[in-house]
Length: 465
Image 1 (cartoon, rainbow, N blue to C red):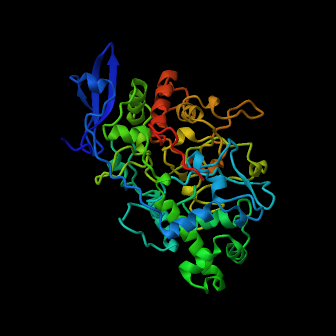
Image 2 (cartoon, helix red, strand yellow):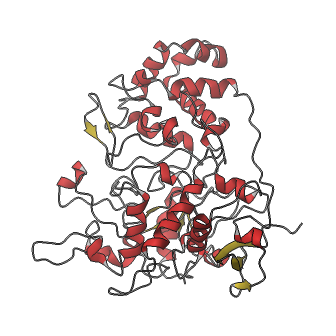
Image 3 (cartoon, rainbow, N blue to C red):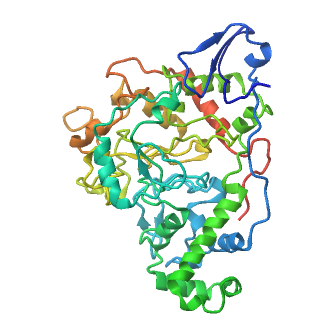
């Protein structure tokens, strides 16, 4: 059996039972390789090069993870007594928010609106640390103080156009990558978990001392004494740190956070067939002349068989339309600039990074009801329309001003418009060009994206709280 990492099926065109097959390799190749003698089985959506994915077998949760699970669902840690980690990261909604509001509400009376859409907590177990430049491998121990210098040095670095056909080349680009939150400001899940706990418009824990007192009064308080000794409650900072570490262990150990149980995972292993619509969508996903989604949302397993996460962990400025439904946007002078503020402050002087946000995984994207950092879209159709029309037919994406003109990139100050990606496909077009996808192709792409939802073949795939 040939190794799947060298050759993988990308394109099947089937007309009246005849097929023309195009293969793509995740390593650099000089072009697309046509194979007119494709078999009928391939034309019907089978994977000709199945691979054995490296997926850890489920194991009983450790005592630390079990403690973390209790903390994850504990609403008493919030000032309102109604908000827990699981409130915004619902296990029945792929550990993302419930409902279709662009942001969730929290605070002392659960009436304080958030400022950004809540991302999913799934598939974050191997998220790399934030860095700028080529991944040095292993842990990145560069001190945060060096980041502005790295960012400044990257300004003049040559940049290779990103395409799904040649991701290995563009991986060498000197660009921001990694980290957690939309702006990458947290390097560990433990730091990330502390953010919502203390945020005044989320759980509103108030202070470490206040959270520590609630942990001491929690029904699982005795577990802290058993695990850390009787003096743990006298060390408030350590107590809260251990509590958040326990939450992290729950996220890492519980397979519901990273089940790799989608139809696409099954297809990679030769256990499922893609429908013709799904296969056509897979073609579009990886075709630089069409969707080119695979340039940022990498779809190939790693060399060790680790399943793809469907993100390159990089940051992009897409020029999204402003979301007028966000309360914080009532102030016309307010702009969320991502990497350079307002919630991340160490890169605030690096104007070339303004408007850039982390590329999320596409796994379980079809189950999301809120997309992008400002929650401006609510389903995959709207998202695909943005990619298809934002350059060629911007009047379909952006609002018109009082003068009747289309308000391009109206969620980013004009001085930062140069940061918006207009180099990588499908953004390398001009106003008035024909959109890259027609209605049928959009439908096929969405059909493929739905194969990334977990729980394939399982009647009740969502974990119970």
